[in-house]
Every structure is written in structure tokens, then in C-alpha cells.
Image 1 (tube, rainbow, N blue to C red):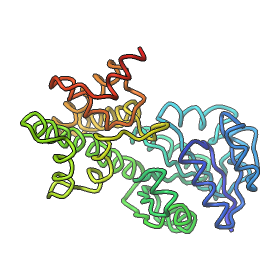
Image 2 (image 1 turned 180 degrees about the vertical axis):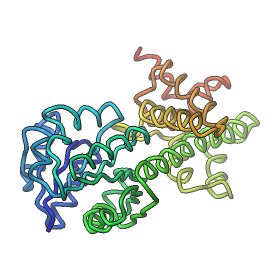
Image 3 (image 1 turned 90 degrees about the vertical axis):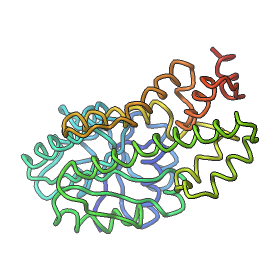
Image 4 (image 1 turned 90 degrees about the horizontal axis):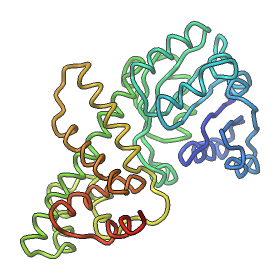
Length: 304
């Protein structure tokens, strides 16, 4: 079996490593904070002292980090992944970052004799743990075919969508739709609520109507009861993706009016102190503008 390396053991990356270990792969990992990876070390993952060492000891090395800057931090320099790549290795980035930078990294990898694939995912921790994650892949088809069994150990649905950068572009196109749909759903709920229909009734009717996409079915109930604990996809993370979408739109001459408008509600959310909440807090932002106070917004304001 391929020797696997994994850099970035956060909420998603760590659970991907868990699935790889359960599938029988030998995995070497690195994370900025080693203590967060202790449970994986206890489960059999090997530790590397630098991202470069991960690449040097692996046939296929993965990254799953926060943004473009974080990818740059773990790939560049003497201790970075690029310094550890050699001919025959495959580098797979699963982060959501700039498609342009992804293509630049692919060129860097090619200069070492290695091949890079961009492979962002569609889904959440719940989707990943239930074995239903979807993965989009851009890059060399032969490298994709070789990496496919490893990717399928992470998530069963894997699509090769084209050349380098195309998969991360596809992920950005998906994610802008999440926030835009959430804003539209919030408008529907609040219009019904202010007309006299109880919020619970409005949500129930909408979730059983033609507008109930999988995203709306999942996050729609959050306007009634926000998920407890750490947000898996908060306003700040969503806004990072919205800004990547707006950058792509400018570069490709694609107007994105609903993306631009929705992005401003995320900015408003951060200004109101709810940037660390799941991005469905857009509802509470719009509710406040409509003169409706919500418990979550009141708590956020009290905590300032």
C-alpha cells in the first residue's frame, strides 16, 4: 500500500487520517500543535517533525489547512513540503484556497518530478464520519487514478473534474451557494414571521417545500436552535470562500451579485460579534435589521 503523509490535523484532517488508519494505511502526520494529534498517535499514526519530513517519508502527501496563507506556510521554505518532494511522489491539497495559487504549487511540484492534485471536499464532519463525503479532484489523470483508492478510503464519491485548480474552483462555486441559499431562506422565514406566522411553522413549511435543498434541510433548523459547541464552518471561514469567489468572478468576468450582497451580511455578523458562529447566523443578522431580536444575538451582544 502507498505510504501516506498528512499535514494539517484539524477537525477534518484528523478524521480523514482516522479513516486512513482504519483502512490499513501507514500514515505519517504533522500538525502545528502536536498535542492535538496525540489521539491519532495513540491510534498508530507516526509523527514527523516538519512538513518536509512528512513528504520525504511518504508516497502520497496530503494537506488540509485553513486558507491560501496556511498552505503557503506548510509548503514553502526549507522545512516545507515542496523541499521534500521528489520524482514519483503525489502531493494532494484538500484545502479551499486560491485556484491561481493551487496552479502555481502544481508547477512547483512538477519541477521536483512530483505531481500535485487539488482535492477539496464537499461535506462536513458529520458527512465525513458517516462515510458520505464527496471529493472533487483537479490535475493529472494518471496521478488521480493512482490516488483514487486512497481518496475513496476518505470519501466514497470522488470526481475528476479537470486540470489543476479546477477542483478548488468547483468547491468555491459550491460554497458561495451555501451562504446565498442561507440568506434567501432567512428572508423567507422572516417575511413569514413578521406577517404573523410563528417562526417554527414557517420553518416547517419551508423545509417541506420546493426550496428545501440538502443545505436548507440541514441548516434551516439552525434558525430555531443553533448548534452547540465549536462551529465547524463559521462566518469567517465562509467569508474567506466568498471572497475567493468574488476574486474568481472578477478574473473570469462573471458577475456575482448575490455573492457580493451575502458577503456583506457576513461582514455585518463579524461586526456584531458573531463571526465565530456557524454561518447560518446570517439569519440573526437579518432578523436584527428587521427589528426582531434573537436569543443568539442578545447573547453575543451581552458578551461584548
